[in-house]
Length: 340
Image 1: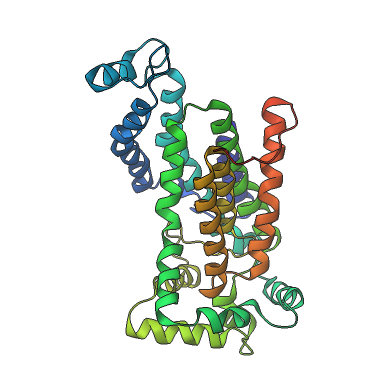
Image 2: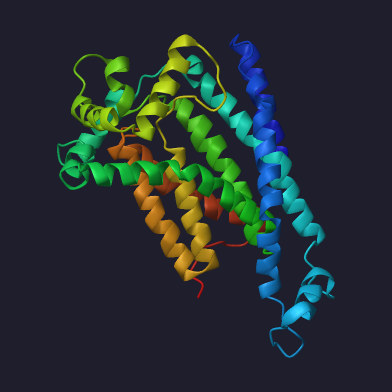
């Protein structure tokens, strides 16, 4: 809570100091505060059913039938609505939308605090890292097929519901140390990567390169390919990119539509989910790892990010995870080993 409130107060200070009236008003956008309470309510029966599955008698045997459900709800030492779970779901229902709305407001201020100026340098770094070619040029022969691109487009936008689902899951979690480490790391990803570094390394991304840098756009071929596909059947990424650009150029200050490429919060959060997955089970670790790779590749293929944006996120998130572990329990906190 201290992190979220301090983050919000800092936003209001920045708004006043740089004369950006109204930029923080989206912190109180009502729609955001309806989403997570609704998700918590909808998830209740699933969370309770998952808890009931873990209930065992004193000999370690699974309790069948109604007796098992009664034990799951109010049994001694295994009741479902413990104080820790109540606190967890309250964080999800109230604090998370407040925090994410604060992040969205900060993100809309980034071009005013630090105008986009790193696109050419990050693009040049991508060339150096990828043997003289841009990453999308390496990917295009393999991914430049309509069916593949559309699949990646859908998987990439699914980051939003996956994000919400993981947050709610952790809200219900009874593994208190893991839950605390997840939420603190999650908040730090948005604050340190999505705000501090994003402002210091302010960049728009490949999809806006031509508009921000000039007519010699090395990403014109990629965006032309995506545009041709979208003319046949809309590409979600292009529609969202158009909305973000319109909000930026017309100063609309719509909620959650700020532009920022470096580093990639999408990749950072996906990597955090992979770390959490490995702490939970082997299959979940693999599933989230594969999804993190899809998000990284998709961010490049759909013109959202330079590859370096995702690489930096993928390097920094494990560091944040370990540092958070130290801060929370003052003991060496290694990266997770797979759980069976």
